[in-house]
Structures are given as C-alpha cells and as structure tokens.
Length: 224
Ligand code: SAH
Ligand code: CA
Image: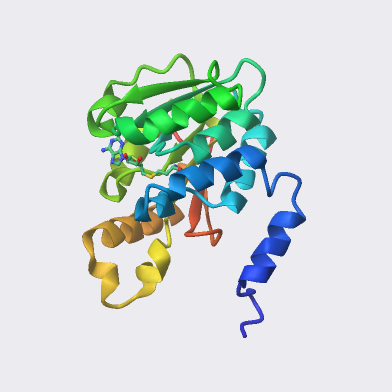
C-alpha cells in the first residue's frame, strides 16, 4: 500500500460520507435513485462526496453567480445552487431535454427554481454567445470532454480574480496514465488539458483525486 495516498474502499467511502454534514442528503439520494432507473448513463452523475464538496466550495468563496456546462439530471446543479449566497444565480447549459426535465423537477423540490436557469441547446454554440450579467464566481464543466478546453478559454475571461473553474472526470477512470487507452480522443483531450492547466500562468491549478478527478483552477490577478 502506498504511504502517500490511501485507497478508498467501499466501507471507507461510506465512513467518509457519514462523517460529513451533508453526506447523505435525502433529496439527492432520491434523485440518484430516479437517475439509476435510466440505466448505465446514471454513472454520469457526480458522486455524493463531490456533491458535498461542490456545495462546500461554492459557499467557501461566497459565490453569487455561477455557470455549469453539463447538467444531466441535476446533482451538481443542486449542490452548487445550495452553496450560493441568497439571491445568487446559476446558469446551466445542457442539450438534453429528457435529462434536464428531471433536473428541473428536483430544482423545484429543493426550492431552488428561482436560483437556477437552464439554457437548453448545444453548449458549443451557446457558450460563445453567453452574455454574462457580471463576472462569474464559479464555473463547473462536466459536458463533452473534447470541448473542455474551448469552454475554458471562452469562460476564463468572464471569471473574477480568485473565482473557480472546476472540471470533472479529469482522471478518466485512470485512462490518463494507461499507455494504450490514453490515446483515445476524449482521454487525450483531458490529458492535454490537465498538462496545460498545471502550467497555465493565469491560474493556480489543483488536480484532486476525488471520484473521477476534479481539476480546480483558481483565477489569478494576472489571469486577464
Ligand atoms: N454534472 C451532471 C452530469 C453531467 S453528464 C451531474 O452531476 O449529474 C454530461 C451532460 O452533458 C449530459 O447531460 C449531456 O446531455 C451534456 N452534454 C454533452 N455534450 C453537450 C453539448 N455539446 N452541449 C450541451 N450539453 C452537452
Ligand atoms: Ca462527470
């Protein structure tokens, strides 16, 4: 066993959730169940631990204005919206009506419908046309992997100093270090982006091995 990091077993993961204030949120648990009925795609939802982490970070930076690309059935959007200051707003982008109608239902159930706005359509088209109503505090990117860098470059100028851009699935189930599978197009795109972020002078970057890997980027003063 490595001494520098601890392999997370199922029981250890359960322990981690139990010893966190919102590790077992009833609404997110119900949403998870309903999402599982969709089949294999359910794996796309962020994990319970990531949900807590997103709420935590959003609250920590006092975020008021956030954007999410890749909403699916709503786990991450609910987590971010819950962390926003009163009167805060989250704009969500997704191109799937069926998935996001589940999300919408849960936004209402969570009482978050006034904080979250959905823009339904292809983010490749919508993101460059997005006119933000001020600087963004937080951006969460979890849609098509090959477009992550495009979303990053398009939105970074709209993020305030010390604001966050967060990317999900940055370890690609371990494929980023698999000599063969790292060459798959989506994994190659993610690997290239991880490397770029690590040496990008506009941000401070931190690749965290939580679930399938979150890459956190804090925009620096000179990030313009
Ligand atoms: N963050 C979500 C999971 C996102 S799964 C959660 O925590 O539950 C990825 C989502 O990205 C899917 O819902 C898919 O419809 C959406 N997506 C993929 N490519 C897209 C594109 N080009 N434009 C908009 N949405 C896209
Ligand atoms: Ca994801």
